[in-house]
Image (tube, rainbow, N blue to C red; front, top):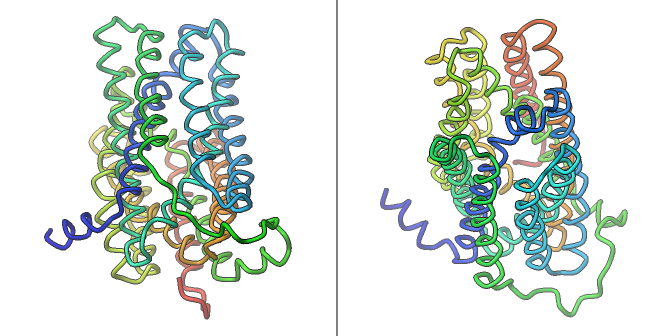
Length: 395
């Protein structure tokens, strides 16, 4: 505990600012996203298929944008402006959800919101890598992820509370969500000073062949690990669907995600700090083993207590691996190409998430929920074999 407190004091203030910006924006986003499927189906009268189509299209767009924003941040040598623009775009889409008269309006708002996420993601992660000392990178990414995830469980909690208070008034809750979004943009704009660097250097295209070669085999191995991890960890939407099968009242189903994000938030920083002091490969292996157990628990029963245990283990896995993978990208890429590195990493992991979620849905419809989670455990075994594959470059 003393070591943990000492490390927290050493983390630069800019990392804390980025963490609280993520917290505020996640509160804003999750207040809306935890209710949006119900809003589309019950208020706007759309089908579940259209809900899935909108979510898939929105997430895919975010993935495409991430690579361009990361490359642009390296080309400009500046990252804060892109991060502010991305957070700002997401914040100013929030009123569109509250005013939406039709599903087309919701689609527009959702796509703009995800564009904002895509714009800010890679530059923000590269900023953390720029600001944090090498020996504290795991702790810095873990802290940012913990604060982000605090927002991810506070948002649905606020949404549930306000829905109960205001008799299921979706639009009123969406209007309240505007406030933390604007607070996030204000904090980032006034609270963070970007470190100056590379001002004298000539700007070059970060995705030129020689620059991609500079990323090196170690970086591309990290990308490969991230892809296989993502194949094993499909969308959390399937956790919600599994919870619904447990017989929990529909109004309380979002609380399952609150539980997952609570565990995630509590575990991300301690494991991030631990990653600075132990082998990354060993920690990844432990994370995969936890995910295997989570998948098997979720596969064997849909009783609410079993589902809750599986969801909690899923949260532990997220806390063990997500900040670690971000730190590994920073450690394996040249400083002037970090934005590009995060862009490619997020793009490839996102494509894997889209594929794994489509496969999970197909298995769910064809063979049942248990088959989906058994398949997830199988992908974990493949990832373990990949980590055991001999390689000269250490991760």
